[in-house]
Amino acid sequence: MSTLFVADLEEFRPVVDGCRASGYRVEGPARGYWTVHGTPDIVLVRKRIGLGPALWNTALAGGIVGTLAAFDRDSLRISGGAS
Image 1 (cartoon, rainbow, N blue to C red):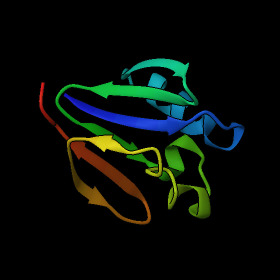
Image 2 (image 1 turned 60 degrees about the vertical axis):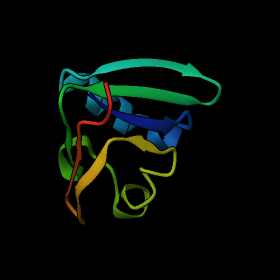
Image 3 (image 1 turned 120 degrees about the vertical axis):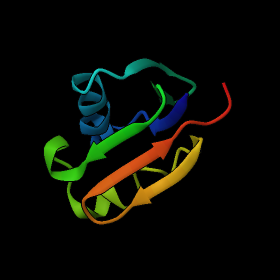
Image 4 (image 1 turned 180 degrees about the horizontal axis):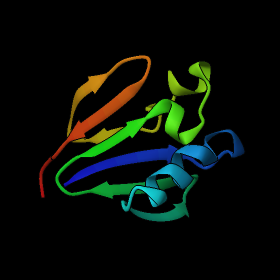
């Protein structure tokens, strides 16, 4: 399972909404963060979720559980971490 922690700020709401729309399990917010779980990976496309480049570049600031398999200007893939 992969996990992405997203800051509970209005600016990052497109990440949370995009994760929900992609079928990932979203929990929270709790203690200032949304928690997104994907099995085995979490894959996001920046333009599909409607996030601008500046916010995209800080979308991982909350942290992850798993391996950052790909992260460039347009896409993100977190590969499964410990179960």
